[in-house]
Length: 121
Image (cartoon, rainbow, N blue to C red):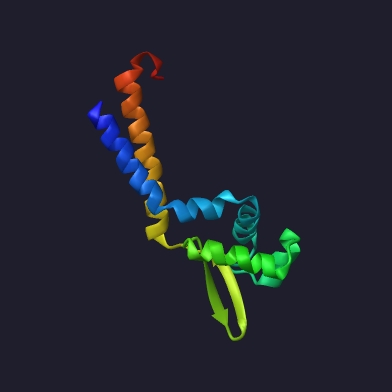
């Protein structure tokens, strides 16, 4: 049972380290912006393009982009006076998220084997 508690505490620490990412993606409006950035034909969108796709005001789009950017999920490329936002390919952030998901799976697998062996599929 001590192993299970240690694993849960470790998961909690990993989750806390990524909490800003989950908060950023947990909002439906930010999910719409994130999806618009992923689905756009070019890499990078300007705020006016995002306002058209999301039907949000410019200040609202800018606010949500800032949250996504602060979480390390979106970045900006400046070209002259224009800013182009894109989904950040920062592998370190995505590696952390993947590691957390993998760790959750491992802990769940361990718990299933230790406590519910009759439920394994």
